[in-house]
Image 1 (spheres, rainbow, N blue to C red):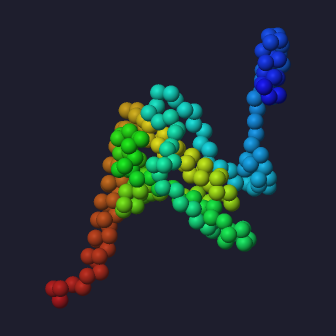
Image 2 (cartoon, helix red, strand yellow; image 1 turned 90 degrees about the horizontal axis):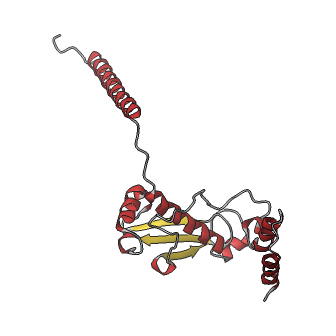
Image 3 (tube, one colour; image 1 turned 180 degrees about the vertical axis):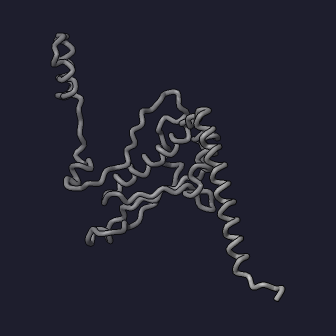
Length: 200
């Protein structure tokens, strides 16, 4: 048994209701990676794409993305970075073909095609790129998190507008249509005034 396991066993065996019990568990089970963005780039102001989303077990997507079902390519990143930029391929190009992504539900794929049609090429691939850092693994994690956020956004039902909001939208549309017709009428009168009289 390693040292962490022995500490956990000691805490459980004591079974003392002390105010420091939760603190001890947090100290034992806390872990911070040595390759985190904060450790690799301590003075960097950039942050990985981490949306504030709490997974719901009732949702159709649990966050798992099979890497063998998507195409991942690497290339040289743009911008400053010295000769390391020319030697290491850190930019991530992630492509997901929606028509063959059977690990996603049909309605999720349909909503992805509707909401992110500007990110889909003519071959039907959803393209996600990331060159946030100079680490290939961190950029891959960033691209995968972007894909997860896209999928989860399709599962969120948009709130229905209230009757007051619908009435306000209708009035704004009518007002915009009246202003457009007024501008069109004024423009037509200006053009007519510039015409050369034909009865002379």
